[in-house]
Length: 452
Image 1 (cartoon, rainbow, N blue to C red):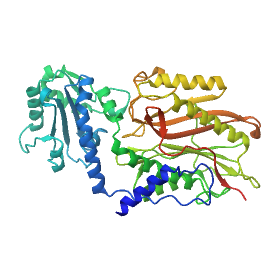
Image 2: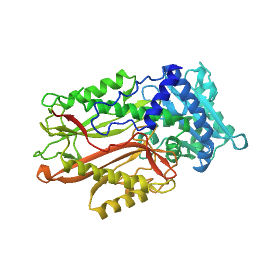
Image 3: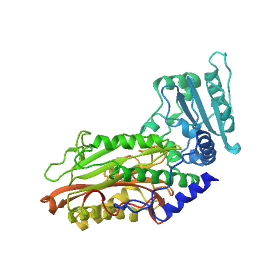
Image 4: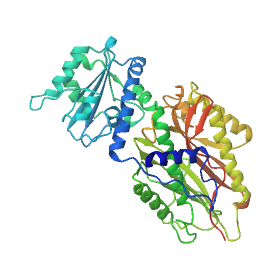
């Protein structure tokens, strides 16, 4: 009951837009976070796995895959394993998970593990013959002979690691097991893997929304007097706060929290066309413009979230108007992406339409939005300045899919003698029939730190 009441209070808060667009000292504290315990997480994710397996056969037929093999190796875990075989640990030398289009019989799923984990029997027909010579190879060869698939999809190649994760040793193992004739039927599983991982389930939504809200709450605390004392606090201390708070809430980060600092009169350092991450030793001072990029992992899902903050100078109560105007430019860019996107449109189309709006308004903009879900930089169409050059840029956006609406604008600020500032934002969103919708309220004003 306590957990039910807690979830209800969080969802009510989200519906009311409990976010942190600016400094609001009188706002009530955010709801406490209580993650599901490990057993509850296993149970929930295994329910989701059963639902994903139920969606797999039409995907296989769409991509002309008659057999799909995922190979998990101890110490070289395949990034697909927890999403095709379940979240429990696998510690065998090599485990095989095989999905077959069994025609009228539907989807057939087989596991050939090094150890017979009991939970696998819910999802697979399990073969286990300890002590028999080459038993895993023989079991796989028997499945190929039984089903005679015209195509055998493997993680052979692709743009991202989850599409090309098969090791050379495991490829050799498979080739020896199925024989030279079947090897000729090996095909890349990339398109199937992408659709499988980019397909979100309705039951994931509320849990993911909680995750995004917690990410937002921790960022708001990081950019507040709780953590930052201007003239004393370093960027490294803010970074370590985010690491530590994620751990205290039972979660991990999937990338190192990035902190960037822009300061009037100090040229911005760039890396690959982006504003560089600032040194941890840099001390935060009044008048600084701060940026954070932070993401958490929970229940096999990943958040990715950015915010901007201004450190008030003595006597200031608000950020300089030029910085406020710069943030509005980024909000306009977000609006362009959100309003242009529709299920069925391609990422390249959305990118071109949004950039055309920015050009017409004279806003210098950059878009590098990417899918979210089972991975932080997830598979799926990316609305990105490289979209027109990337494989998959002309694939349709999938309804219900999650996207990190990640982008920036560059604006000359009068109060900084015309110095250009990057105003960067990133907000998780989900695709509806009417465009993307944020999981939590986006940033409408700079977070404010310090002041008298």
